[in-house]
Image (tube, rainbow, N blue to C red):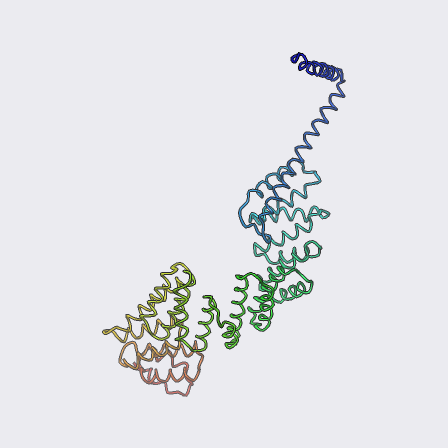
Amino acid sequence: MTNFKSQEPNSKNQKLNKRIFLGICNLKLGSWILVLGSWFLLVVQCAYFNTFYNAQNSFRQGKKLVVHDTLKTDSEFFDKTIEKTTAVIIKHPNSRYVDDALFMMGASYYYKGDYRRALEKLDFVVLNYPASKFQDDALYYKGLAHYQQEKFGGAIIALKQAQESKQYRVKAMIALCYVYFKDHNYLSLTEVAGDLIKEGIDKKEKRWVLDLLGEAQFKQAFYENALVSFHELLSITRLKEDRREVTLKIAETYLEMGDYDRCQEFLEGQADLEFKSILADLNVKLGDVPRAKELYFDIAINSSFDFSAETFYKLAELYKTDDSLEQAIAYYDSSVGRAPMSEYGVKAKKMGDILRKVDIFSKETEATDRAQFLLAEIYFVEFGDPARAMTEYGKVYTNFPQSEWAAKAKYAQFWISKDIFKNDSLTQSLARDLLNSYPNSKYAKMVSIFLPPDEDNKGWSEE
C-alpha cells in the first residue's frame, strides 16, 4: 500500500515531462533560435551583473580598512576589485557601468599606492565621462594621487575642481591645506584654513586644520599667531596623547620666540621626559648649564633608545663646550651605544672620534707646534667654530714663534677674518703683523695685496 502511493506522483511527473518534451520537439526552427538566443543573453547578463556586483562588493569591503583616505593594512579586496572591473571593461566596453568600473579601478590603485595607474584610470573618467556621477570622486582622488607623488600643481587643480561639488567641498579644502603645507605655500594654506574654520566644520576636521595652520605659522616665525592656533587646538583636544603633542608645540613656540618666563611657567610641574627636555634646552638658553646637565642626564637614563641617544648627545655637547674632553667623549659614546644608527648616534660617533684626536693633540709632548696647529684646524674644519679656531691658531705663533707652523697659523687667522668675519680692520692688522713678523714667508706676499698702496711692503720682496 505504502509503496504504491509513493510511486503515484512519479508517474504523473513522468507524463507531464513527456508532454513538455513533445511540445518542445514540435517547435519550429525559428522558435528554437529565439529560445536559445534569449537563454544565451540571460546567461551573459547574469555573468556580467555578477562580475560587476563582485567588484562593487570587494571595493566596499576594502574601503572598510581605509582611514582618512589611507589604507592602513594591505588588503586583497582592492586586488579583487581591479580584477573584476578589468573583466567588466574588457568584456562589456559599451556597458553603462564602465565609468563605475573605471573609477573603482582607479581608486583601488590609489589605495594600493600605485599612483601612476590610478591617475591613468581617473583621468580617463574625467575626460571621457563628463556626465558620470563619479566625476567629482575621480577629481578628488586625482588630487590625492598627485599629492602623493608631490606633483603639487596637478593636485591643486584637481582639488579646486573637486571642492566645487557639495559632496567633496570640505574634504577637498582640507586636502588642499595639506598640499599647500607640503609645498610651503603658507599664504594659501592660511586663506583656505580660515575659510574652513568659518564654515563650521566638525571638531575632528577643525583639529586637522588648526594643527596645519599652527605649524605653518610656526615655520614662518609668526609665533604669536601660532600660539593662538595651538591654544585653540588644545581646547578642543581630548585624547591624552594628542593633548601632550599640542602642549609640546606650545612650549616649543614659547622657547623659539624667546619668551622664557612663559615657557618655564607653562612647563612647571610637567613630568613627561620630552617636556623635561624642552626645560633643559630652556636652561641652556638661560645660562643655567649645571641645571641643564642635571635634566639631560635624568632624561637620558630614563628614556627610549632614540630619545636617549639625542639627550646624551646634547649632554656631550655641553661638556665639549666646557673643554671637559673625557666626559664629553664618554657621553658621545653613550649616545652611540643607545642608538648607533639613529641621527644622533651617527653624529655622536663622528664627534667622539674627532674629540679623541683633540685629546691626543692636546697631550702631545714632542711636535707640540704641529699638534697645536692641527688642533686649531679641527676647531675650524670639523667643529665649524671659527672663533675658537682663531684662539687656537694664535697659540701657535705665540707659544712657538720660530716654528714653521707660525706664519701659516697667522695666515689662517687672516683668512678667517677676511672671508668669515669680514672684518676689514682686523684683516689689515693681521696682514701687517704677518709682514712684520714673517717678511720672508710665502704668506707675507699673499697678504700684501690687501694692504693700502702707501704701506711699506718691502719686507716680503727680499728673500
